[in-house]
Length: 212
Image 1 (cartoon, one colour):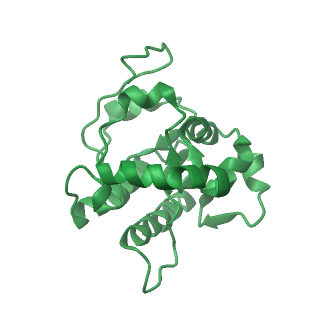
Image 2: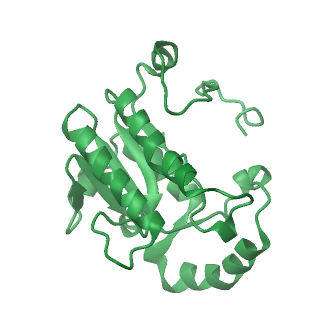
């Protein structure tokens, strides 16, 4: 995607081990205003093109995020999670919501014990339908995903906008938050939630700040 849209401001770093960050990698990140951590995998097995086992889901969602936060603790950070995330799971809490909640608790502790200013953005429905710039780079999606999007997409866009996150606005928001441009907007939100040193941003907060 970057190769197809060259930009002198972009520095591509090829990194294969997301649990380890050596000095060579960290040296290339020095001077950055922030970091958007968006490594993840679809929650439902039906929406994934291949099988992801429970240990792999935990590694991708939790272990890698913790490793990045520790390595990049001198940078501000924005982590992207799901709208069903909870730090107070109950008996009926879904597995993925529990793991993402545990991740937020862990990242909050890392933020509290370091200089990391962290945000967790709980995205509910990332919508690529109107984002033509990224469509050539979207991987083929399972049929069930396309059907679910066709059935639920329009109602969410029109009647449940606090759950809607159009990806063009979402991408801008994540970068702007990591650079500290919306600190005042986020702090001013009613009932702003935080986990130790990690500020929680809801899908409704994204809509309010970006005005869509």
